[in-house]
Image 1 (cartoon, rainbow, N blue to C red):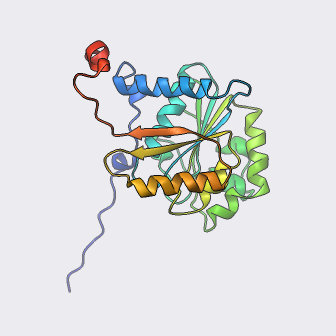
Image 2: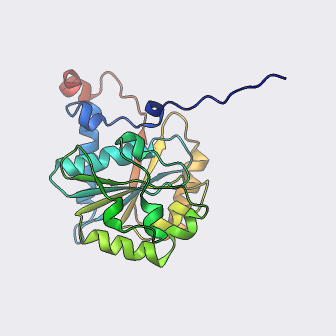
Length: 236
């Protein structure tokens, strides 16, 4: 009998690229800063403090976008906390090379205090709360009163809190969390996201009374004659 040993996923594969750190002068980094500016201008009367990123399906770039948006807010001098709220398939501990032993799940189950789960990163002003051990009931934890109390507590300590949430069409977690956040960004992969799925994701957020800040188009290829190439292309 042949035995096929499952290949262990390399750590680097799970880590998301922080282009805003590795190449802050690139066109993509500039686009993340533009998104930051758009978030600032999206609300004239109230400051957006809690921002959630999600997508319709897995592998559309939401975790990469969440990490880079958290970085550009930190680069602006804001005190930022990035929370890995994807308790189904967490990745932030790989991206920032931090320990995932104590994280959001431990805080929500009262096994740890929030301060124990907040880890400063090498990036000035940016801290991360990893997922922690994967729980059997993520949606129940996210919808709990403990989660509401945690968000209120963290808003007293941080200027901006960015949540990386699971895909909308797979589980209910993101729909529940979107209702607790000031704004939600829907990430769409221009190369793979089905139009119907994007529309269903939008409807799901609307049914949760989420405030949709906009759609982030990931993996979009600029035309060579685009003005960004003409004026900024050499910076990348």
